[in-house]
Image: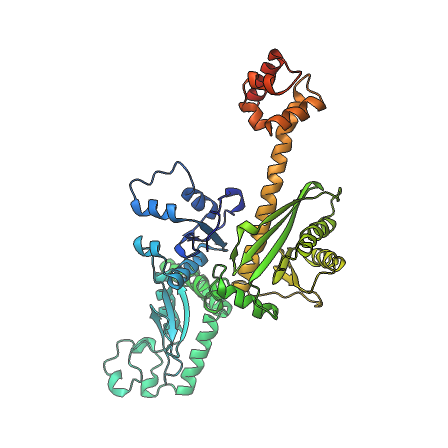
Length: 487
């Protein structure tokens, strides 16, 4: 995979916590990092003035970055988990060199044991056990496992099937229900385990309510130290096993766009062919003014920037995104059909039913051969498919959704950058209107000769006199002086 080096625009990166991924010119992941503020962290890598002489590894990394992407998440804990998973998935070269590979603790229980117990683990093995995590706060996880074991009076011993002989050497008998000597039946012990698993799966409300009652009673009895300990337990239980964090166990790793995500997208949408080539569209305008459209292309899940196209809206002169989308589709695919260019495997528009309908109308008017077309609505990440009354909603971290989001965001970025370019050019050109003595004809000639106000600002008065008939030395000096004062 080779192509143009990806540019960095700070305004297109959110200030949310998240994970960023750097790739080399061949698309290989070379570094994975986390950030509490993605915009600040990524900006620090792309500052031209950054001094990396003291750190040759960092200097080498920055020189190797060709493509980059980011994944915004809700909390810093999620970014820690996601960073850890991506590092383990890709084993990036610079993470190894910079020693950023971390292993966070997991909770583990073997339900095949006669008397299961909850324990800590560093690695997730294919051993039939049930794992939860990983969790970035190891101390909180340890404390929570210790609390749950004591709360439900489960065994803490490491012996797989303890008996009376083992009981003689037990140091935790006071906090255990002692099933090994028959004080509780195996069936009753299992019921306690099931209750604990409900908490681990996120149903923390009952135990938190009981703990809060205990804490209030301790406070009323002026047992403040004991109340503080219970408060810490409540905080840990909510943080480790609350609903906000339950997704850690069940969600898949959000991978960067690639072959796996293409395969997942085919399965998710029920496509007959693999969506190797996908084209995505977006519209950008302000109240219908300076409206533009963009088309970006992904091949095998990665940007194919040489195939990007941008469109200046010509025929729509009011704020009508649907009509603008029809114009862009008509121009783009009309040309493809005239020139017998291959059609993509999948087309995606940024928007819901309205945008999708506009795109389909344009294709039908062109008598375009059948091609899969979808719309992606940003509010709830709903995927609209022709012929289906209800949208498809994929799991948050599913690779297929990540690929569509990357395509949508790239189309939006490309459209916004073109719109910004036109807007800035319009603003610059309007400066000429403020110079007394410059009418429409002279303004047109100046822009034709110099291309833009930026280039005109660099010109000397003598250059203007030489290239624009009818402008003398004094007036040329006036133009240059005005533009430089406004720079």
